Image 1 (tube, rainbow over the protein chains, first blue to last red):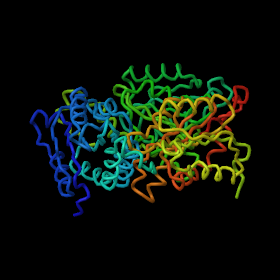
Image 2: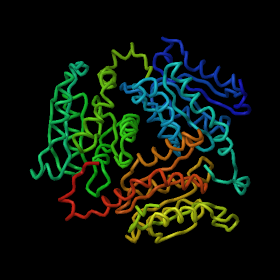
Image 3: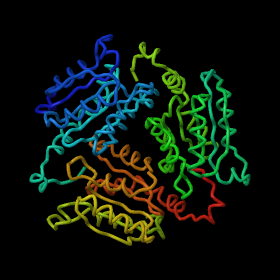
Image 4: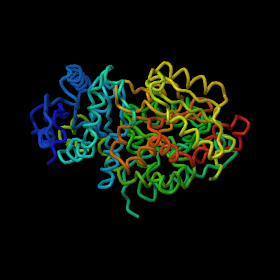
Length: 173
Length: 173
Length: 173
């Protein structure tokens, strides 16, 4: 498998009341970790939190502000149940949305199941970190990750640009 | 026709200045009502209002807060004319957006006409009610409804979950 | 080539630090101008500005508020680099989003390259003017323009409607 994520640092955040309480093993977080590592990426942070907006926001902010992660993948909390608030928490912390990522994940998933349209995930940038909400099931999370995989190296390259490097920046995207 | 909407309670809101003034018969509201009832759903509320944001918002809130409807379908006011404000009124009252529903309706419609991209409809959740903006023509409204039909039972099931039931909730969406 | 843009007045705004500083020739603005004029449209305003949110916002507002342009096309600043803020500036000035335009541009572009999902462009209406963010490369900008070309005449017709004409407005979109 191509190591296209070589040198890219990830955070993996599982959002699930039951897994946070220890009532259900977290299968999605480890599945994402394997998918990342198979392609050469590094997991700098991994955690499980409850479906509480404040806790999700605090974790996302801490990881972004540490400057130790390039990309955060969340899994869970994107559905329509009353406790599903991952997209709302994510919107609170991102500074610049990247709507095309969520659109592409849903459009790819919609080819297999109409239920994809109920997945409320968003994506966006906080400082130099890209945050992507993925579905809660291990299969859905990994499939969503595979949809965006090809663009992560370019996105991270752009996010790492500093003011000096920017003089050579072509803004072609 | 399969009664997949059995036990699901709808509100149908026609947004149109001309129909509200009695200058044009409302064809879209009745067309949606028929489509709902053919599949076993119940119409708990039906109304016609003018293209006034405050009136649209008040009606949506009253219906959601009554806890007597699971899904509200609006028809009209999603275009680009100066008086088209249904999406803005809807955004004001929803607590959690469901962007994939509007994306799926537009993507399906785009296969037939490029004008679908001018339809500004949104969808989202207020409390336990899902609100979906549909186009203003009877044909456009019913076609949009058919795009989301298959996911309504699952969405309503999730929205009805209470804190107790949630312990068994799988958050797979 | 069909003159479908006859009588439609455009503004073309290139957003690029390097072009604003004179370090790189602006190829995208002239490419859009040619594409507009070939189809019978008129370019009322054309400018190059740096990737500064306040300057982008001021220019967009001045052009919209002049009532001299029906459609503004921006090119550049929609990527993920730290200085790319065209969508944020656009969101600040639009009153009513038209999400389907940006979705359609990205979906069309996604057929050619996965990088389309990193293009963060938005579209929306301020007063009687439609603003559309296009990618920064000449090719990407013109391809995006061609995706929306077919709907511009209808959108402009709707935007020009005044309260008097609205009595005959059918709100079918």
